Image (tube, rainbow over all chains, first blue to last red; front, side, top):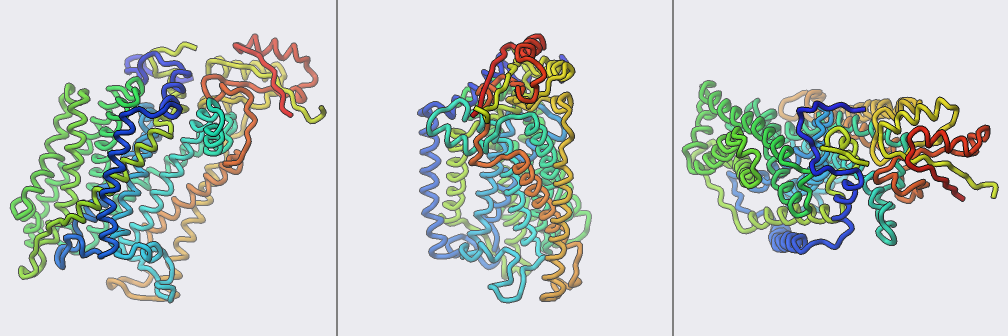
Length: 454
Length: 176
């Protein structure tokens, strides 16, 4: 029996019964999709089609299609890579870390957040693969195979190789964690369906029958996977930050990077979860499951992680000055006042000032304000990566090598492509998969809803 | 037919009623085949007398395997097969090998444990589960009692015990 303090707000409102939960979530899977869904999906697919022109052009002509030059060898591509990976982090945080902390409010949002993680990691992985120039070779170049099948191996001292292992492990473990959670819900859909749908969801549900033995093992597997995914998610962005921190470029070579990147990742990820959830709850009428108090909780996480990010920016700047290392201080001074000052100040405004608005209860419980700020945060986090990467590179060691980076249409197009891919996948998920983890919501329903009749 | 299996099913609405019912039914000497629930009920495996799952041990062993394989692979490639000095570091630069070792530990632990879970729970895409009641994945808890295992007791008696333990319905189900 579970006991919850009576002063806590109910997690599920509207006096839902167990059957209502099943019905409200399965409805989206079973009914014909609404016009809103079709329009949204077609828009995303259109962006995907448009962006694929840039992908084809890049693959056909080569990386020269991008605005990179001899000085700025990393720019939009790696910015986008770090941005997408960071977004993915919130899903694992919600499903794994909040599970370990026994936060029951995660049950309404973990499914969609994990789906977001998986799609974001797919989008992220595209950038380093395309940047290899010949991705059909890149598929095995990065693996621990003898180089071009001779006898020279990949370099295990390189953070770029650590990244290959980190991102692929992260993707694989997130996918398994997500799928294990989906199995009982697929069984629910199977048992309500007939005909072809029964066959398809029957196969997807892996013959789940809900036996107490299986549930016992399921709980055990979930807990251990959460325990594994927690250090994993921290390791992934730590290793992403090593790509920069282990180099000797002023502005990159700082020990603060791992914790600062992880906090920033969770910050931007929660913002993306909010963007998606606010739309999903409206379109699918799930306001009783994803309530204002869920949105408020996520906004509180944004305040905490946003403040960590803000403190990290200030610390970084202070240490650059206090260290007395001139190139280091110049890198930071140049960020704030150099030719990319506007990017720096967009980053500062969006990431340091805007999340502080959530201290005001009216703002953090307002859907409109949250939606706008969630997008502002992700704009800010994109500029954070842009500032770190491009401003540190564009002032090279020799002033004769100084250069600027200007994106080309192919840079923009490849970025658009990932947007199209992400949203197409998310809309397909929202239509064909249960967007809320029914079994877990039912498990907390008795202790956390307004009332449960029969 | 000989191979037919017959079950008496108790249908429960509430998880707390179910937990007490399981205790009651078991103490009256009835062997419960299995209980089917739409969501995990905390303490159910305890009142049913199931042994703790050993899946965490499986995860640990697969994790150790991952650690070992990752270190062996990196030492073999970087120290024995093609030694090369990179960035002025030692051939065997142990700290640089930690990230990949950690990732492979997690990967093998997760996949190994999930694999064992799939096998032990007979979860596979082509599995045809025995569904006692379609509502057991919606809002009802189904307690299944195999008549063959409880031949000492009359069926009417079993049904009576189920009813008095709080079952909202008592049904019969047969599989061929």
